Length: 431
Image 1 (tube, rainbow, N blue to C red):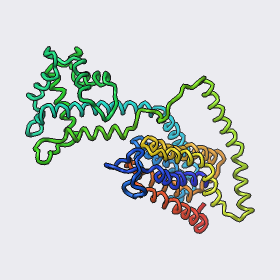
Image 2 (image 1 turned 135 degrees about the vertical axis):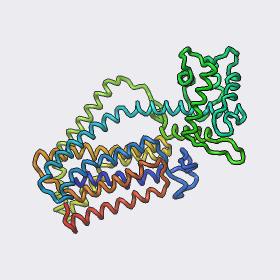
Image 3 (image 1 turned 60 degrees about the horizontal axis):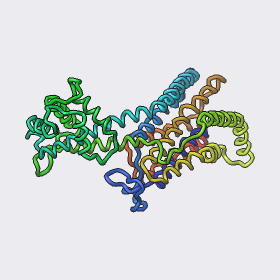
Image 4 (image 1 turned 90 degrees about the vertical axis):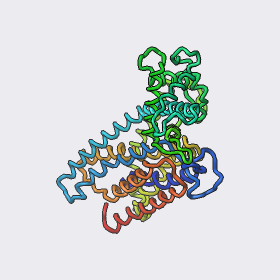
């Protein structure tokens, strides 16, 4: 249990803070610029940025501490009769959360692609509205901010190049290509199909004038709800279309890239054998860990007795440092690439490792306690896990940019956690 707590604390403090330090880039407009570091160690103008999925990973990590709270309730309430039942309830919830987390990881790429496609469609909408606003010389809206239907009809005539009274997919594609979207890369034909689906109420594969007016009016109202009706200074025109465009750009950036890797993906020969070999290696690693788990505990206990070094120091500091070395090295290597995508992968890896500690490792531990009828008495370790996970989880769930000064929070939490466990265990007699 000391190793579990120590591992969680080290991942979210020392390693987390180090990733912010080595991965820092210049911050412009509240976002870290990939590969740009000209301001050294500036506390507020350098830092790292992640995508929105990393925030979700942090939120899941914070939620994963629920089984710890449940199993600890009888001790908080000074109840001895409900301890065995609390362990069972916590075990069921922990296993359920483990299964749910695994299912989420399987479907998360699909969810990400769907949300990214939706964000691109919104970006196309905002780009077309901005283009039409420029073509209308700012008269796309009336003085009260409502859609100007007369101007919209004239814009329809401008887009209808062959003057046949309706817009074909080719004319719509020419409009989208003419706008020259430079912010994102997307499939033009797919964009045309989605815009057609928004406008073509008659399902005849053409956009009639009334359908165009209704569609643009609907888009303007959606932009007004999202962007807000802001007046442009000294112009008297409404600015919510520009606000809507900026927001869609930010949403797309937060969702991250579609690319699965920053490296060139080479063709894998005999993928079936590679998969089989990977499964065998995982099983072998599991067997080795299981075989040496009990001797490891005995070795730590005997070493602590022989050297008079508190077992707290070994289980809470030395062992987590050794067992988390792979996560530390990979996380720091990714962070040194100084890109939003690699930063997102880095912090997602840390949050994911802690989540698995909180659900998988705890599930095994609770199962042993319940089956063997042992007493759950790990108040200090549970308290430290709750504090670190909730503080860092809440901190990382509501922001995507972390200035350099934020690493100080992580670095302060580490000695605080060590001191708290030591005081509770060796001064107040908690175990």
